[in-house]
Image (tube, rainbow, N blue to C red):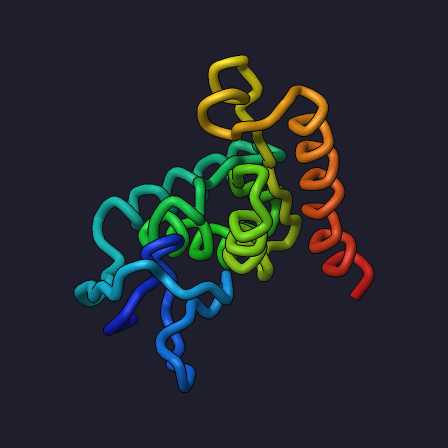
Length: 159
């Protein structure tokens, strides 16, 4: 794949609209316009795929393949594993943010048995300084994101 532009938020490929570039997955405009070089499947990707194949051979029923929203490389490796593994559930990690869940689903959509591991930091420090939310708001966010993630899995399983 050769991306000439990528999103600062999720590092996914950008599309050009009349008023500038917009991320294909998050539909957001990045704060800065950056470029990145060609993405190649390097030895780390192939090693990660080989480990996933071994886990499948050993009969592991679930494996967490990575955090697709963290980087283009992690997205590609999770996608590669999801596309290859057919006898184990492939899981992607996502923060309690819709764009993370959307990106995780993009990486997983061809998996035989996809799943999304949604997490949310809930310590008092995280609530106050990172999330700027009261405990009740954090619970509401957690519940809404856990309800949102299975929507993709439900669509997959019913089609």
